Length: 277
Image (cartoon, rainbow, N blue to C red):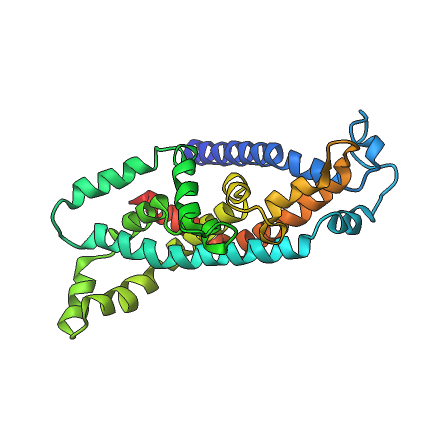
């Protein structure tokens, strides 16, 4: 028993040591970005201490004044929330159908949908742009969120989660007189909070970090998002003021970090439950 206990302790220590090392490696770029955002422009690439000799706090207000970031934040928040709302409607319905309903060619259709996950988004971007242009919908919120109205990854994740829900629970609700949609909204969805939180995080981050598609489908400054707005801080003649760009980048990642911290518990639960399946 003593040897087994010692082995478990050694395993736990080794596991946490590896996790700490990996977390430290992942955090290094973020720490460098935040510290460098307070530097003078001429000192950012100077070898030596990461700690700035002079903390230049005005980099942040100056960075926000270099472009209309207020408008960019409004656009990014609006498109990200619309994306999340659309995926919370389309993905649970599709996931529920593939998990619990019986219909012709279900397995074939699901395999076809899975294949779409292997198609790079860049290969369809021209066709998507031509579609938006033919509909005269460029420079609109709908054009920005159109490719993200649904997510095959989210459908797959929810399908795997819904398959863990016992059919007997749904049958009991039907015996009580509930319709199929009532079973879905009042029985199945309340049990899927952790999976839905995972979808919220992935959907929000995908929309918030999108760069190529919003750049292509928008031309008006007032329709730009925060990621595309960083281009306004690069001057081809005078060069880039890297501390201010890093300051703007630090501000831009704050909403994503806040969302993840707020939903972290549900995110871990959702991934764990799907993984156990």
